[in-house]
Length: 298
Image 1 (cartoon, helix red, strand yellow):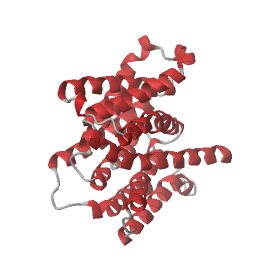
Image 2 (spheres, one colour):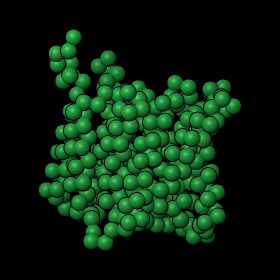
Image 3 (cartoon, one colour):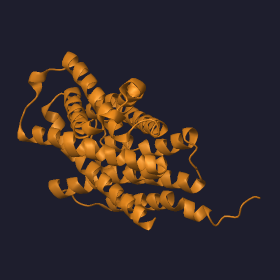
Image 4 (cartoon, helix red, strand yellow):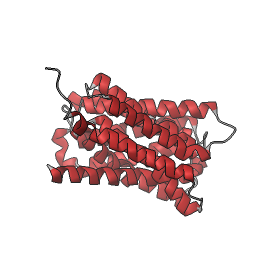
């Protein structure tokens, strides 16, 4: 049991590090391509790569039985999430947009309580809210006097659709193979984004330089296939809200990476926000141990 817990914690740590690195990479890459085409190429490349790797397990695909589930997951987790996320990066500073997107763990905890019957104690509520406040403090230096209303709306919608998508995947996890879910949702969603992007954007606007190719390659390998296989396996293995709260660390890691590479100073707000995130994870991750000692009503 302890060994399993250690492996889960290691996987969570690797995931948040991976996503933390992804933010600055995508932010630097999206300026060289239209957002929908960039999102579509990343998703389609990642989905096809996973499908190729698990081709020997094609019997588990069960397309006729599960195609609706694949399409619904693709709608929320790829078309809406990836599409809005990539477009939104062009409308807001990265710090502020990450605050809005990483409202998702709070929504995930609430949705898991409503639709998955997961426990929602006052300790978990405090933990979720504390984590979000920590993210706000970490990113507050990135706020500017001019805030795009469109960007704010896109950020909030990204968080909402991401939470819906994760809940849906958790809901149907016993009916669909996890690897094929990742492969199909990104392949279908990526193709859809490429189709919409081809109609509304220009392929000639893509600058095929080293930074763009690096961002595309990273997203199509580490950022999508590996990251989401780990994420959904963790979601399916434990409470969605408990796994989701660890994603509060992603913007914090992104800020530290930006500090190192852009030589930005480490501020008191950054340290205070990080401490709140740590407290948040403690509350959510250990609330069951606390409630174990509470007397029963019977």
